[in-house]
Image (cartoon, rainbow, N blue to C red; front, side, top):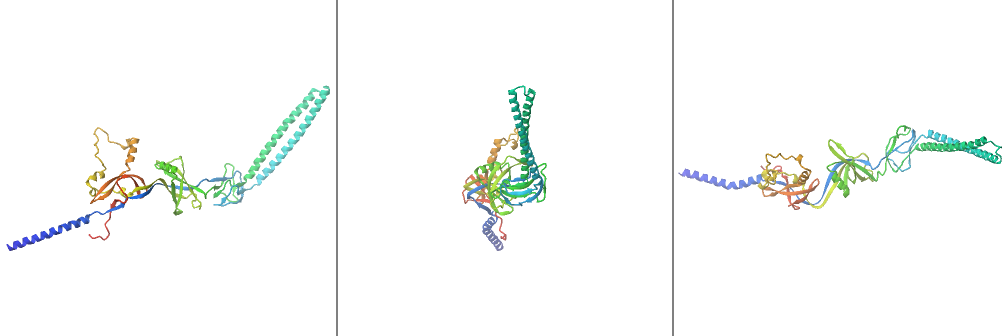
Length: 428
């Protein structure tokens, strides 16, 4: 009997020890299995919405300087990247043939002018002869026969016609001389405006042939230090925002590979309508004007642009990571589970006689409404050991934050963005 009492006492002691250790063990296991959430705070400030694109730097205007005449280049006065003024002599084509043409046409003009003087003298003599014949005929008609009188008259008329022809020949000779003189002037290739020579396509001694088309000798970019244009291709989905940004004169920032640490700024100068379709993607050219006082932006550079399309000041901002977070059902309050299942209210089951709804058959009004509903989101906050959903309506977004349009959130409130990973070396 004593042995039995001892065993009963021993068992009671063990039960007591187990009961006493159960509560601390349960607390330890609860702490061990507790989920540590990674959070980020709601903040207040300004937000900018951006549209990104790539483009190519080009001069605001580039003028091709060509040659109207043919011949060897005997003088070349400019090189690459040289700034020129309007009227500066860029190159000279051998003028020998054109000077000879001018001399020939000048001699031809003098010959025609002399011919006019000769015909004019003959006409004057014919007029005098006619006057004397008329005077004699009036004195006595028997002195000169009527046939002779006709000869005097028609001789005068013939010389008057010859004078008109000679005068016309003089005008033709003058026009020919002007043409030859112009060709001689074209042997001097001069700049038509101030600018910088960004391309030179000839060398001294090279022969220029302008028989069929005007060859390009130089490319001049005016005002290259004042302003350049960046030609960007923007997707049709963003072009409405770009046009709105153009009206508001929002800035456009961009970088180039040559100066990766420097930020350049410009503005939308033009949205052109000559669209391009590539693999069913429609894009429109957008011209961004940017100053270039240091000549760092060179033609042909590739630019990475960010168009500011909207701006808000003093708004409540939600971290984007909180909008992307999607918790497991085991961590969520029971009343918020329908949100994870994609239902905020009970949906009526479709009738068997009715076909299933098809988004492709939705009307334009319905599609617009669906797009508006995309801004209705949920974020998660800690509510004891579980997570509680907070409904929000979002607005503008940037790379880190999204504008809060509607929702019960205040600056400084912590939103769950993920699960905190365990610390390295933590005790098991």
